[in-house]
Amino acid sequence: MAKGLIVGFILAFLVIAVGAYFYFGLGLAPVATAASPMPFENYLAHRGLKAVVHKASGLKSPVDPSEPNLLAGATIYRHQCAVCHGLPGQETTSIARGMFPKPPQLMKGKGVTDDPVGETFWLVQNGIRLTGMPGFRDSLTDTDMWQVSELLANANKLPDPVRAELLRKD
Image (cartoon, rainbow, N blue to C red; front, side, top):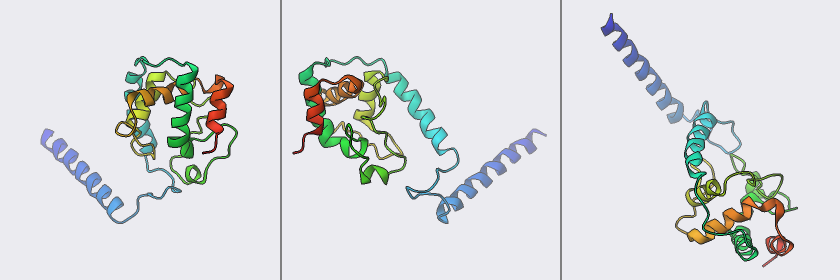
């Protein structure tokens, strides 16, 4: 009886593995940005991300949300983030409209103002797998990433000079 159960589990695993191999190998998987997500794609990706980001929520920012730091964060955001995540009062860019999943527009609505700044820092630093969100660990300093994170945490109450910096044209 136990031997039959083990053989059944092995056969079921092999059938699933071979099915997945052909599903991807024959080009049946939805891989275009306009395609619907694969079964369990959203669930699995979000579950893992949520668990890791929750651990980062306790990180404390060494950067205070002073106007000079918010101004520096606004400059970095404008150059590195705005093309995907948008600017206050601006339309979504064609790049952002063409992405899957759609990047959140962080300067519209609540954005991430209700997220702990440590979570945002972790996301900026490491990126998000299976999305277009890159990690900036190798291209920005920790101070830069904390300044952007503080900017986003305070996006709903930015001083006028910081809002002006966000909208400044180079």
